[in-house]
Length: 138
Image (cartoon, rainbow, N blue to C red):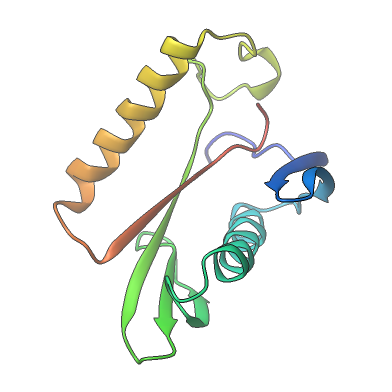
């Protein structure tokens, strides 16, 4: 089994026309459950803030070793949602507690770009995949 997914009390920071809101978020215990919380949060936010971008009718979690979710739109189209956890520490080796939490902006940008490149190589050049990068213990 891989590294333990962190869980516990986390915060989602939301910027909006009324200012900044900090929402407490308790993460579940397993990777599929964590990904479901992240995906549903994203789907609700994207539909609320960008109506018409996806017009999500359903969000279905797929089995491991596949895309993470399939998004079905109200128009009957579909896209795949692929989640990628962002750690931020280039020296991360499975121990969240000892991972560095201090990084410069250019270092973080480099790590995000590496993650995007890795996913792009794996899934190829397709417009059918939406990449959602999230953090759980950063």
